[in-house]
Length: 380
Image 1 (tube, rainbow, N blue to C red):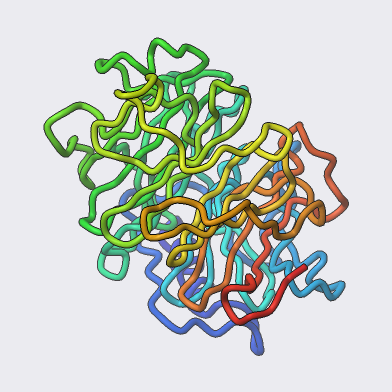
Image 2 (tube, rainbow, N blue to C red; image 1 turned 45 degrees about the vertical axis):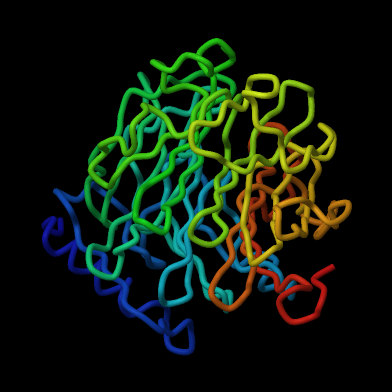
């Protein structure tokens, strides 16, 4: 049996060299330094042991090998968080398995990097969000919003390392379980939570439920109040425009979903004048918002129930200039996470194995498209 030190060395070597010759060649640093004792993880190679019963097999190329240029990885299980690394590849988390998987824009074979331990998947629980440290080039850290048997929490880890708690005690429930994560331009972390099905908690300033929280990288709250905004039902995704504007997707009490422009101290569950109106409301059968990404004045919203990406164009005041446009409508099923990379590519995860979808043979998938605003072309 290999010693833990030898196993860690083999994993690090495999990650740094990428795939076999002719595969993806990284353009920047990739730092799999363990922050603590590494858990048992499978080496990212063809010789990795078979997954445990009930676990999905190693993700593969799937549709990519069949010629679909939008699919960069397939065979995943409910990918719910994705971050793009400085080298142009991406790391995605699976909600139910806790697996952390690396995928590549040139459709090189994906591989498992590690498994987050202790994840509870009852109801809407699991690994629900992923963010990259603002100083990733120096510290190699990832942040994840995860459910345990007792709470929702934010943890941080280096690839191959033991996740360390950053912020704990967020109420968890079988519904409205939240999970949005995004770093602001100032290096603070914004955390979106759900009300766990109890709207009173969202209005209670002493509860962490139904809030957008603002913390530093050590888990200390930032600002003069215990929350950044309150009154939310289920913040599933957060995104930012420039240095000062942040948005949240939320499940509105009207039966629709909404995109909120976040204001510090805002109460999104109260009627005017204390409440803050949504940027846009998406009807329930077109909604189920689970992803949010911004490029300039354009907002991309992944819709689970709507099985599309809604595209909004905002004017200088943050008001939509017309009705939302659509991308990928009905083509890949339920769509969740949306993330933009430095080249204008839009990464999208499918969520057809979440119990509410009808999975295809190669689901779930990670897509990368060039939306019309990127180079004037259309992925439809």
